[in-house]
Image (cartoon, rainbow, N blue to C red; front, side):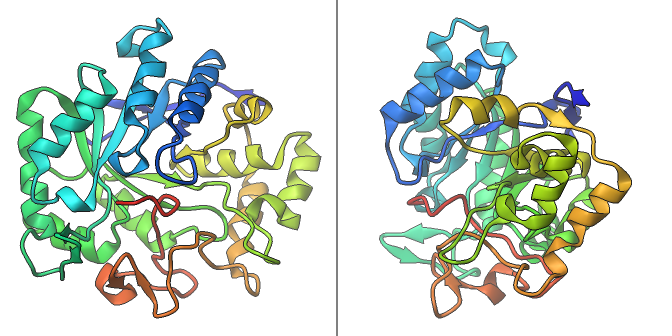
Amino acid sequence: MSLEIPQFVLNNRIKIPSVGLGCWMGSPGCGERAYAMVQKAIKYGYRHFDTAAGYGNEEQVGKAIKDSGVPRNEFYITTKLPNLAHNQVQEAFAESLRKLDCEYLDLYLMHWPQASIDGRVLASDESPTIIETWKEMEKLLDSGKVKSIGTSNFSIKTLQTLLLHCSVVPAVNQVELHPFLPSVSLHNFCEEKRIQLTAYCPLGRPMGEQLGPHNDPTIIKLAEKLKVDPGQVLLSWGVQKNIIVIPKTENENRMKTNITLVTLSREDMEAVDKIHTEPGKHRSTLTYHDQSGRVFGWTYEQLGWDMGIGGIVNASSGGATV
């Protein structure tokens, strides 16, 4: 049975659509493709769009939204602070707002906890720390140009550090999340702290000979039973767990199915929950983890990522230059 797209309520009482469209195109830029993708998505009913300064397509995403003729207040627009600008939050925000040309932002995220200054990735205790950067982001709320602020790729460890010093609790934490990487501990922690979890790459992806969640036998079996696409099973699972999902697709048929949720039974949900416990399944499906166990200059320990089953693994949105 199909459902209307539900909205979740953030900790500041602002509503956010539970399904959106991720605008990372696989490499920085690709503005023409991003413009065409967003235009098509609007036609099919999407109103939640997620981009980032590091994606290099804010201008085209904003133009597609503006050219649609749909009133601004019907959209939910998210972008992100790049690592290179942790010491220039106000300027980076103003530049993103200028490129998007959308009057105000609904959500502004710290894309990564790592700061990078003059080509060097800083240690967690070097200035600007995540606390210093967050305090600058808090000031943005006073401008009226952004409604909510949040984090991306934060773990329990980095969130705990932030929560000790922040005046504003992050409204959202965005991480890689799908049945191969459910980040159960992080999900529970965010629910306890009233931080809304958002899943990027919610469909996962194949890596070499390793199949992704979309090709998992359990997912395929459920899709056949429900007479839907496997992607609908994956996205519906996420939303039923009160997680926002932001899949990316340029395919019009998938745009239609991705925004059409279905009801999974308790047994169906439990079956999907167990997938990551199967041998070889619990893993990230993204490619920016280097052989030394670092992600964009920080170790898993610095990031607070536990790579074991039931841990808090999370990663970035597709390897954008940040």
